[in-house]
Image (tube, rainbow, N blue to C red; front, top):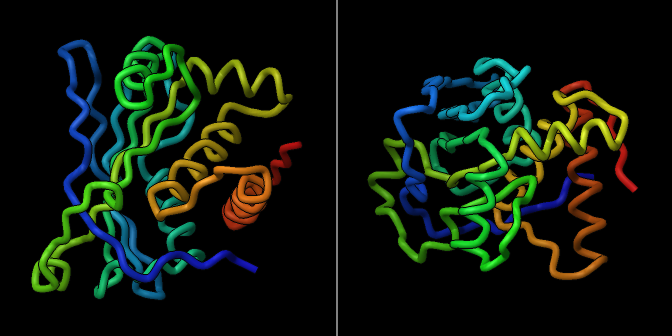
Amino acid sequence: MMQEFPASADITESSGVALSDAEVWTGTTESQSAQGISVEVDVQEAGAIASPVSQDTWADWFQTWLTALAPTRSPIGAYELSLRLTTDAEIHQLNAQYRQVDRPTDVLSFSALESGVTLPASLLAEEPAPLGDIIISLDTATTQAQQRGHTLTEELAWLASHGLLHLLGWDHPDEAHLQKMLQQQVNLLQTIGLEVQYD
């Protein structure tokens, strides 16, 4: 059974990670399900490792996951988020700046819930509700995929699902919460046809 999320949330603009001239802009993709949930995914890539996942696939995955999770933040069932696929160097800098952890990590999430800003209901009735930003290190994802014996695509899906749950208000302050979150990630990956188990 899927875990439920908080019904109300404060929404804000995304964190606004700056792009440098060397980075590649890959655009925004929108997907909509028969159930009426739609999502706009802004995908950005940086670094030497190319993502094996296309823009359309990212949009489909987030669409499927949001449909399965059924958040209620948007009265029109419309959401937007950004996904940045980057390097260990950039995620290290962001991890140090925002979490005071001086090392690279695999995934960071900047949830709109944490901003304390509430968008007017009239705006949410017409525009997608911003969920926030997910940042994944392709360098770390590649290493972890090799260590865990699965594909980079599977690792990216695992990390993106983890990031999405954080955007929706999930957290893992202790082992019990972490296990619930990891099981939810397994459930989400199954909805897109991937079978990944983590110990």
